[in-house]
Length: 94
Image 1: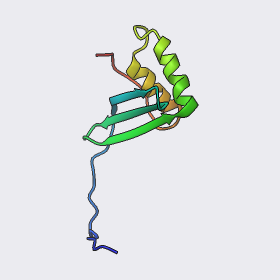
Image 2 (image 1 turned 135 degrees about the vertical axis):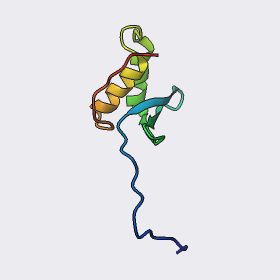
Image 3 (image 1 turned 180 degrees about the vertical axis):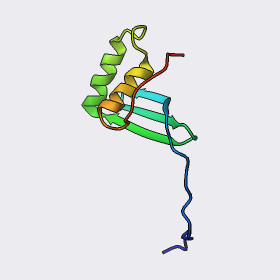
C-alpha cells in the first residue's frame, strides 16, 4: 500500500448552501444525461441519468416550452424529486 498522510486535525470546509447548474449534456445516441453542479464554494457534484429514463427525459425536454419554466429549474426540480439535492429552488432565469 502506498504511503499516506493522516491529518491530526481534519480540514473543515465552509458549508455549501447553494448549487447551480454548471453543465447539462444530452447524449441522444448513448442515452445519457450528464449534469454538473457548481457549489457555493467551488465544489462540484455530478449526476447521470441513463438508458430509457434518460431518453424519456430528453423527449420531454425536447418538447418543453422553456419560456414557461427554464431548463435549469426543470433539472433542479428533477434532482430534488430524485433525492440528489435537497432544498428550495429560487431565482430567475438568466
